[in-house]
Image (cartoon, each protein chain N blue to C red):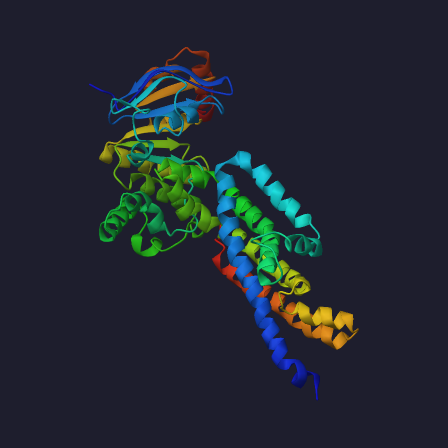
Length: 246
Length: 208
């Protein structure tokens, strides 16, 4: 079986410094792989290698069995939902237009876009009648995140890339959105690559956790295996979690 | 016979000339400056030389520039054409610079999101960057208009007409009423343009 995404000995260098090195792993169809690590460990770089915002210096990233070098980057990105921490909603577009960006780029007929947007708003818990015509600055942080997730899902991409999407939320909203996202994910069965530095979030959302340190993937395991890992960096993260648990 | 009876019709005619000089120059300067400003956001290596040249042109004394242009074939000579060329030269800097800074000032997260969703560079530019930079670009055009209205008075020195005619004549015969007949409408024109463009700018600037 071909994985949804496959890293084959991938190194990415910028100004002769390796941001990620020798990455070898496969992301299975329908799983949620959480990339965990400290700031600057290369998790965002790894994510950006998947939708070809970056191209590997060495090795290849295969999406649906095809190297990102062979993919038309525009097609690849439209088949890949992308949510970033700052969300990057377009401030001059209404909520409805923000969510409909990719369908509009794909030239769907307007009635179909509108129907899709309303479905998605309902799916992420935003009442279309109340929110469709608002602008991003009129929303709370949590509502904006929901719009960001809806926007990433709009063209029904098989793959979702999420870069600390819930990082800026208050803890209560954050846990609530995480729970909703997990339920959503179970219903939709998308392949998700999720970047975070929060071990709690990794355990809550991940079907597997990939721990990165200094540009390398040092542990890749299910949450249960991960909790038993003896790797020093994994222990460091787990100790934080245990402290939180007390 | 009162001053207005004697000069009223000419003031109107000169005001019209003046407005036309500035309007034509601004349209040309926008047509050159905005694409150039966009180009240097795409080719960052060009930004220093382009902004440097536009900056240097801005520092030329205006009367000297009008003088320099007279002997230049095609674009020079006596008359409105030369004046328009000079006004374009002076308008370019604020327009190029504001286009550049406006687009570069778009939140990188928004640009990243646009690219990540599969926008082509053109789509990103037309649907995201230009609309978001529009207020800043317009502020540059507004500055160019206000500078242009003032500068165009000097165009009379090379026979391009406009409100400067009154000023030069008034200075020559030491008649302050005549000077005011040129200066006052020019000042009003600058203020009205500034106010109107400022109003549009505020309406079209996107709230964060």
